[in-house]
Image: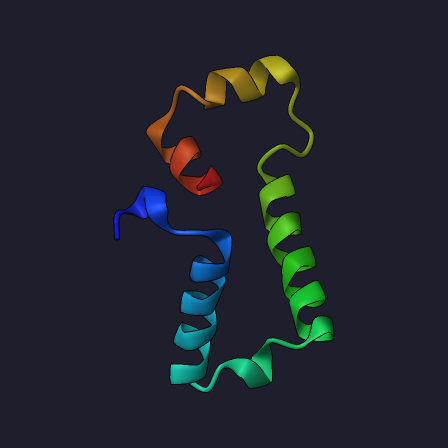
Length: 70
């Protein structure tokens, strides 16, 4: 099967298996996921805080800044 042939359901099944193999399901509860999403979003927003659009555009030329965004 090529990557193009895989469906979203196939990918979701793979992810579920990955999580189950590592006993991570205890951490994948709505509250924990919401908190984690908010924390990660905050970290991303810090890279833009107090910067003008022009400053962000300039920073995007930097490999270090782009790495931090990724």
